[in-house]
Image (tube, rainbow, N blue to C red; front, side):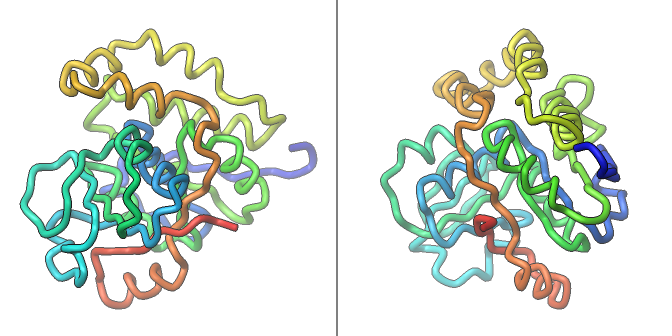
Length: 238
């Protein structure tokens, strides 16, 4: 945007980064970020993120909830894969919990930011419009982390497109998406999830298909800071 300067920090090692103040955007395209957008799209309330499966152990009412994760663990409640495709097919109105290999941990590394948002290609334009109003530094936090590179390229591609769009006209991210469709990363993902991996990819790589902006409830950020809680609530930004 002409006349306004934005300060971006791209974080590809959230485990050691010191994220303070400003707005943090957790980017986990395949699939944590997109799953949260899908849950809001289906009007699921409340929606929670647990830092790890262990964080779920003290949650009351979990037996009446749906738990979305690609990790293998036992817990009360109905279990589903961390899959936006499954969320969109579901007719359930139960509370939802999400915990994942990287995305949920990256989110908890951001809790000293003033605001924590969830970003991906599926909510691209609504995220960009919000960031244009954000004061202070904008942290683009890549959940894939440095240790997964060079194969996990989708989060970096999304961050690059976000930064470019915030500073200029919102023209989407067609260039980045076209490059991703030809990347071996997608074949690897489908290989490990042959039953519905391709269906998930059609959701996560469709621009603006889920125009909802998940954010961590501000009061839950303060509570998590004070108590060291491993669970926060997600709500749509108004």
